Length: 227
Image (tube, rainbow, N blue to C red):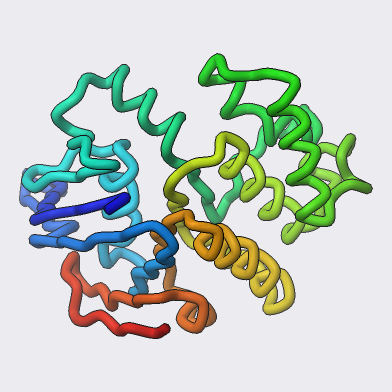
């Protein structure tokens, strides 16, 4: 099992210290080759789930096992290392660095983990080719279309060959054509043995997912086996 999430609870303190529950006893498992989608409206807890699953936000209760390691039983430095080695993140807002070109943007995770090498630059160039961005290799994010920026963000998430990909509304800013392109690339990652946890309110995701969980008010209402 690549990812196992068990009994996760998370609350936030709001006005007058009143606790608002973001996640209520949430559990799921994802294995190699699976694309699992969590679908629900804004504010239902999807992003909180993704942040906890990715080792970025402590749960109040429960455990997150990534490759049989409990992410919240290890030190912050060890958790950072696990994220760099095992996880790729894709976000709706892309978070590309505006003043460097797309090749340099894609290589950022490898530089940050001190794993940069000529072979990784070769891999980055290969991803650029696979994502039909070769003609943009020296362009900066502001010179790209929205769909191209999302493809750059996806290539960046894949540069270190992660075991699992976390995607937060990866098609939210995209038209149907570009959404289809990005979802096909994410599906291909799963078909090649990767694991994917994708959270969205976009109904276009369903046909690409192996399982879809419906979330409301921090809980799973149901799950559907799609393929």
